[in-house]
Structure formats: structure tokens, C-alpha cells
Length: 509
Ligand SMILES: [Zn+2]
Image 1 (tube, rainbow, N blue to C red):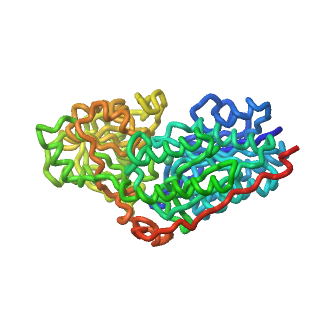
Image 2 (cartoon, rainbow, N blue to C red):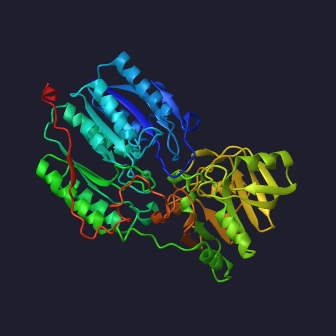
Image 3 (cartoon, rainbow, N blue to C red):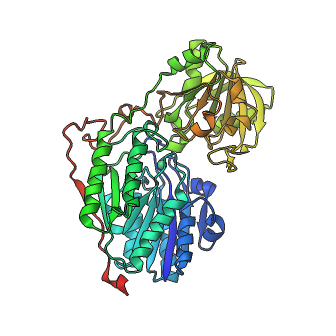
């Protein structure tokens, strides 16, 4: 039995005008054919879980293509076409295949297609035919569309946020495919959609009501009422006409699958206001950092400019506000700003000049300031994450420099902010966060594991950016106005229910 394996993974932020091209994917990772085994096997990735299940079942894995990029703006459509061609070529040369396992993010938009994940599954379905089994592993922030459900047999989402179960989700998707391929026909998938988006820093599976809902789903699986379930919180910065948060269930009984999916979707809608995070203003956080009774450092969470959420990482708004306020608090910040890096490297260490900082990638949301700064140090931009999340992963932010303003503000300027949640993004560049009054962290929730070990306070803050937590501040053009938070959903009734594909009699063979 031959099972094709492929991956296309990028989370698109519709509000970041910086289009992600082939170079972005080359930077983070493209591998084709057998190279996928060498690069991905044994790694904490969905594809690795898929390979292991295929081997355990005595089937043959046919690796096609894996393309991965950090979250960012929409993808240049030619990148997706290249992936589809590589996948089609593998099917032509090594097919026919009985199954296909696909690792997707699930909230992916190109310059020509708002539902890249649906398109990928449709193209693959057309290539492999109606009897092949297609199973998908997706991010918890996926937008599970009708086209995805109509073309895939199974869709499994992460159970964790912050995400740690990439491998396990690949295993779940592969196991469902194997069950169907081995003749188990009574596996019914139901997807219930709800018109709701909430900022990503308003919930997690570590604690609180979202964690409780996830535990409820897990209890339905352990009591054998469901075979699998997923709760998808559509990433809120995806501006598409067909969008939804959703619950997907798989059960041996169709009615049971629907009943539990509707029940969980109803609970999810009921939590919409509880998912709104408590947010500070930048001035409030500066005032807290000024107070001698506040332990150092105060963490200003600038999630609106988090590249993990697809923003450009080029916002200088917090530093600008500290300067405007006349505050002398010691401040550490980080910035994507290639021109400033170049200027610093030309000047050399110890030299002073006027720099234009900020707004180099996303001038729609982020302005620039002109300020005198001293080049404190120069770097090649590579560091190893200290963790606990992602410990040991090597990050490269491109050529970098530390600029010092007024003797109190230190900024790591680099080609692309990455490894946002790890303190080494500062420490590797000679900035010890514990010595600063205010530390800017451009992440949604990934940073908490490391920073809560020493931070005095952690303050989610209203800042401008393509991933702003204040969703009403962003210019949505396509998402229907019937969506929460544009609409309160007070009289909302669940109607968006899609039933998955039935098993094929061919699989009884
Ligand atoms: Zn996610």
C-alpha cells in the first residue's frame, strides 16, 4: 500500500502587506522527495508522525514535497503552484497511491486564492481519485472550509496552544486514514462552523475555559463516544469571505458525531466574551515600569507586531512612546529593520548617527521615527534558543546590531525578528532582560514559559500592527459583518454543519 505524504505550512496574515515569496520558504525549509525522510523524520513535526504510522502499518511512504515558512503576509500564488506541481509530478511518477497524508497550517491565503488549503486538497483529490483516503493534520488556528471537508476524509487539529503536539496530530490523522484504508467504513466526520474570531492571546490550553473545553473533548474520546475531535479557533487576522472557527468530530455513529460537534461549538460561542484578554495601554505599562516598587523587568507584550501571528516585526511604536513621554526607564526592544542594520554595519561599533527606525515592511500599520543612536555591537544574527519551549532550536535573524538611544534604550535591529518568545533573542546580543525596567516581547503566548520564570509583571498591551488584539481596529474587507466581534451573536443559532465524505466500498478489499 502506497501513501503519499506532503506538507504546505504557512499562516497568512491578510493585514501584513509584505507578500511571502519563494525566498521566505527557501529560508525556512523546502524539501522534495526522499530528502523529506532525512530532514523531517524523528523531528517534532506532523510529517514525522505520519511517516511513523505508515511504517508501523507496513505501508510504503511516498514523500512528495514539504514547504514551510514562518507566519507572514499572503503568499505569492506562484509558490503554491510550484508546490502543487511538485506533488502532481510525484503522483504521476510514483502513483497510483491508496492514501495521501497532508500537513497543512489551514489558514493560508495567496495573492490569488483565499482558501489555499481547500485548493491544495481539491487538486490532490482530482489527481488521486475518489477512492483514495486523504487525511490532514492542521493548526489549531485553521480555517476549515467546505472545500477542505469535501475533499479530505479526515482533518485533525492540534489540541494544544501554545502548540506542542505537532507530531501527535500527524499520528492522529495517519491513524484515521489507516483505519479507513483497512476497511473500517463507519467513521463519520462532522464539521460545525461558527462566525467568531477572537485575539490569539485571549485563551490557551494551559489553563482557563478553553483548556476545559479541550479536556471535555478528550473525555469524549477516552470514553469512546468520539474517535477524534478538533477545536479550530480561526486565526483572526485572516480576512476572507468564507471563514469560520469550527469544531470537527469523528465518530462511529453519524448522529453522535453531530451531537457532540454542535454541543462543543455551542460552548465555544458561549465563551466569546471570556476570550477577550485584559489589555494595558502603552502609557500604563510605562508608568508601571517607572515605579520603584514594581519588580524588574515589566514585560510589554507587543503581540500586534508578532511575526508568530504574521505581523512584520517592524513596529517602533513602544520605543517612540517611551521617548515622547520623556521617561528614563531602561528599555529593551527588538525590530525588523534591514536598512538600519546595514547603516550600523557601515558605521561600526561606537559610532553615532541619526537612524530612521521602523515601518520598513508594513508601512500601513507601522510608522518610522528619526532618532540619534549609537552602534553598541554588531552580530551575525544566529543564536540557540534556551527554552523551555523550543530549547536547542537554532534561530537566524539575519545580520543584526544593537543600537543604543539616549543611554537608556537598547534595540536589537535585525533582518527578520524570529524566535520571538525566547530570551536569547536579547541575551545572545548582550542584553540581559533582568537588568531592564521594560522589555518589549513581540509574541502572543509562546514567550510565557520562559519569561514568567523571572518577569516582574507581564502586560498584554494595545499596540498598532497587523496582528492587533483589538480586532475592531483593523480594516476587514471580506469577513462578513455577521462575525463576532463585529456582531454580538446574541441570538445566534448553529446552522453551519457539514458532513464529511462517506467511506468507499473499495476500501473493503
Ligand atoms: Zn496556531
